[in-house]
Length: 204
Length: 247
Image 1 (cartoon, chains in turn yellow, orange):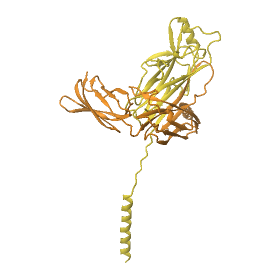
Image 2 (image 1 turned 90 degrees about the vertical axis):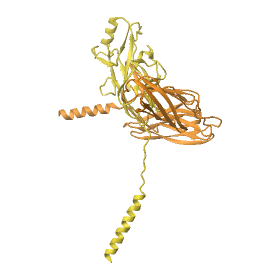
Image 3 (image 1 turned 135 degrees about the horizontal axis):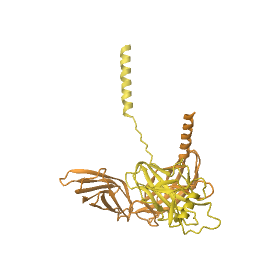
């Protein structure tokens, strides 16, 4: 009797197991993701900086650009001709790198990063600021083939993926400042001026 | 002693890295409503950093350029029919904020309307002195609303031409957003398939066009190829054929 009961229980257990298996539910939840992460939020051009020797340079798009400093500026005045693009004296938030890093993380094929607007104005003109975006890894392509004035277009597309943009894409972002030998600088100097560049990421 | 110092430096560098880390979910909204209908959707904004992030919300009408970029445009303006709650908010450290979007489908309008909901972080406080450039990051949520019963879908596709990448032209003479997925199938002179070039989620704005080139993973040998483009959207399937000359 006992053996029969055990056999019956085993049968019932296997039946209930089979039923449970039939009722398994697989729930899939995949969020749509569009992420923007950038490190450098403050690029400083200090032509009164006395701690740099005037020879420090940053390579942007294959060409060297001298970092802004008093020594570099005086050397530019000494040459007394044309215009020169300078790299920032320092950047905040990059952990020592001479460029800002922008990361785009998404599960969508198409996205665009552009300068959407600029607020504030510099005495020498906002057109003196140039931007260069260089692809470090991932998807899409840069729209800046050379350092381009941030006022060249409004909005100004920096980089984008027209297709297959899914995953993580990393771009280096450089800013340069143009000095012109014909600039007549006020007696009080130009100091403590700031503009804010608004970067917009969209997946259309 | 040297090792902990190296580790500490590494930690400080890592901490110095992200200044802004924002995630938008979903990345865009595509809704269908009958004229006069209303819907409320929730969008989540996540702050990946260990400090608060104050955000403001702005609405901007837009259209898509031939390159697929978002450009401000007053045509097909959905913004007057869209409200967000709240319009300014703070996301807690490593927190998520929910924003409600209420859309009312305007009676009398036809096809697809669009509005870009822009979430902007405040510019970072900076030091003093010199000339400074600061960055203020934004995430744009593209919102499309199609009015049910008023759709007039259409698509014209042209594929082929000359180049290392395959030229494609897609025109949308209809009144609805066409979001196209499919592929271009490439055949050699003997009719053997030599490549498949995928297209995913490609938007073509109503009344607009898209011009682009599909690059094969590995360059094809010079020659003439027959190309068949097959695309699919919510409104149907489309096909086009052409000749591609690879120099």
